[in-house]
Length: 366
Image (cartoon, rainbow, N blue to C red; front, side, top):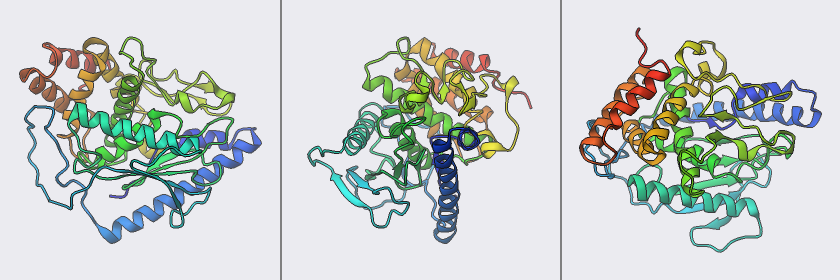
């Protein structure tokens, strides 16, 4: 399986590419074109290597037994160190410049420092709360590439590292300025090394969903927010001056994050009755993620975001590549039951999770 998990959905970029904003239009077209190139390269590399990624990566270190069984493959010890590279506005990663490594002092470049600091916060919070040792749970080093391409309107995880564009400065700003973006892309790596959810249809929507879940969880921890005080918006911090006040997604009210002349109108569903069944965006990976997103939001509002995140993290480790929404419901409710039994989450959490999923139309009768 090849990996190219982007922060900005292709349908938003396509809308910008057709807009009357001449500068942004050209940049969006270039961003889409580069995405095609990267996907082809990753697919070719994946076919040559044929490497399975789910090895020794699942964790039960938050104190609960897992109900999954899996093989463990030992690899060389790693330290979870951060290294930031400057792509110097080039598309190739071969001649990038290392600008900050683990323990190095701040640099004059704000994007370098933001990528370094936010990546450290995400890593440390997963370690302290979930007991996870970096992306692969084996101390994988965090590689962050900044200033990718010329005003590149996206960020992505490519299977081994994170890549961040600067944005056009009007519709989207620099993608390293928000901890949500870095947490979201790093979480794609965690999903790769656990459930390895296939990036299409419902499994792909779950892949995006888990990144939204852990992204918003990390942001709330960094900002000392609670479920009640958080805005539950995804991507609001990278909106440029043309779109201040809007976002990419709302976990509280899917379908309400944006409505403007450049991006179009948010079409995320918050219930299975509005499920998108078309071919766009790998069969709706960024669209239908709104349904489980709403279930997580409802759960967090009842038992708190951290408790909900623990349940979802446990569930992620017991899912599988072609998992459906019904599978996620079954696994996550089982995780809630296990964590409740071992006093890791509040009593009644299982009932809260079931109710939250019911409110979004899950499980769905076949």
